[in-house]
Length: 205
Image: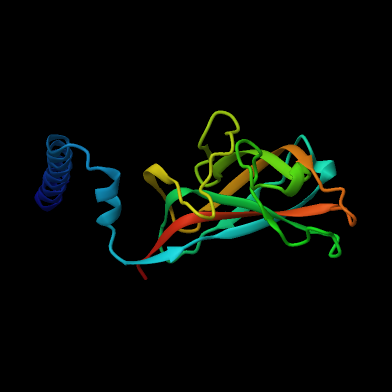
């Protein structure tokens, strides 16, 4: 190794050392400053905030009673992260047959303490649910959750906003615990579950 090569090797080693020191100093400064609240982390992301409520539907019949249903998948765009701010809005409507007495009527997805849920207490469903971010394969709960959701007339905020990366696929997995259809003059044979995630997108293109 000649003098020039030796000098270049020393300069490279010194440069690597300086970079490591800079990274360590950055880590130390972050530790001294303390972790920022998640709201501050999200607010620091540049871009426009655009309301966004991804929505998917799932048809079901009485044969789906007591089953873990097919996941509803929400594929996010590449234009920026999605910030989920509230629990999902989950509801259902009678969708089959088209001549059903209660066709098209919206219903909640639980039967407790909701006196206006059904007419004559003849038609209802009860579900539990899971939410999965398929990117890191992260299930947001150990077991299926009971039906605490935002309502059509009242949104229920999350304890903290939840950020999903661009191109993430979020899955909502319902379990039908109880399906009871109306036996009216034209009986219900099928319904459509409707799930909307509540939040906004940070558009940073």
